[in-house]
Image 1 (cartoon, rainbow, N blue to C red):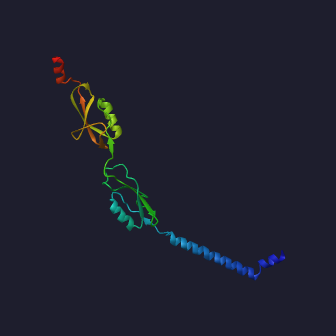
Image 2: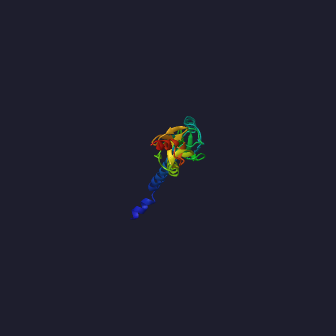
Image 3: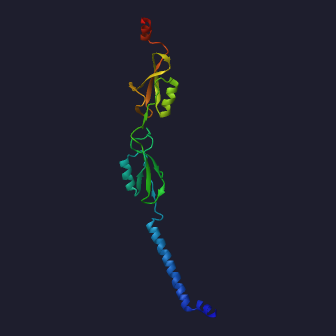
Length: 195
């Protein structure tokens, strides 16, 4: 035990301990410098605002900022933004990020997605309006024709053309309902009299 304590205070042990500590300090300092250089410690890039830029303009701006990008699926069409423009980004504009960070973009599609016109022939105007709204179509106006079923839908029109249930229209399209006014058509009256 006495020799062990003598060894701990010996010149040889103290020199080796000093060299080991110096080597450890140099190693830690070297690793920290390497990490600082490889991770760009303290160096940040401010994310630009890509809102309303076209995809081509966004690509150029991303490369100029030293960033990377990924385009996510398109969102629902937003009429406030140009077609095929950036409507959302993550991280948001003004965020400080490291160089080569990936920015995620959501692009505005070319227009509203198409929806199927529901089966609303021989349905009341009120129910037809609800069914159209449920799929994203709007009733622009209602016109009436001489037909016995009051407020019963007989025809559907879009931009003046007849359409049928099952046809596809862009979401938010304006529909015209042609409904009965509860009056028997003159041709039906004439036909019943001749019989």
